Length: 230
Ligand SMILES: [Zn+2]
Image (cartoon, rainbow, N blue to C red; front, side, top):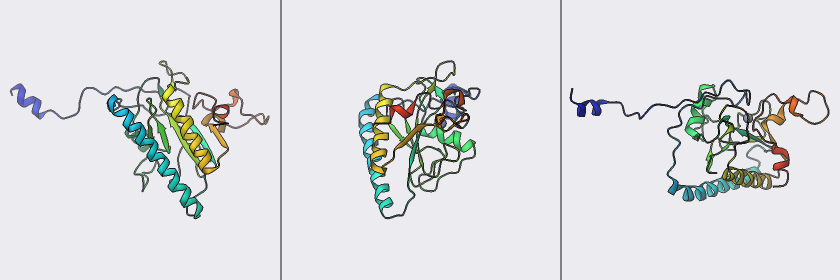
């Protein structure tokens, strides 16, 4: 067969799939996932500025709508924010499609309204863009026993190149995380913001979840003081 025809008949998938399997790390036994394909992660840099503005506008609209439903008593009250990481390696982009795939594979249900499997409500990409997962009206799946009244906010990253826990947040991610959490806190009058690891049991009962008590390291930084006053 001539090369032209062969090429025409080839399946349309591109290149090889890069797999970064992080499943051996203990950063986050709940969130841990195979990072799967990274080839869809590239975003045209010249689109970023516009997308960034659009995502923030969309975010503000969504939370305003939810607040209005809340006033009418139509939706559940949200009392805490849990911060997560995707437990993927520094600099590796992750898309909402990736997370949907991982969480679908873990048996999470497809949400009727948003159409997402993703257990988080918001995921912050490396460039600081807000990616939308479940709607706030849809109960998250991100902290065992704390999903019914919490909001799940996640950033892409959390592991160094060897798969060890690391605060890999880019400046853009830090900026967006603080902005998103500040908006959520003020809109829903939420005081409690903590990392996933801070939900570990306080085994010695001293009132603080110490580092030796963490059953996971997610989100790989101390979210409590960081977002106390945003
Ligand atoms: Zn987590």
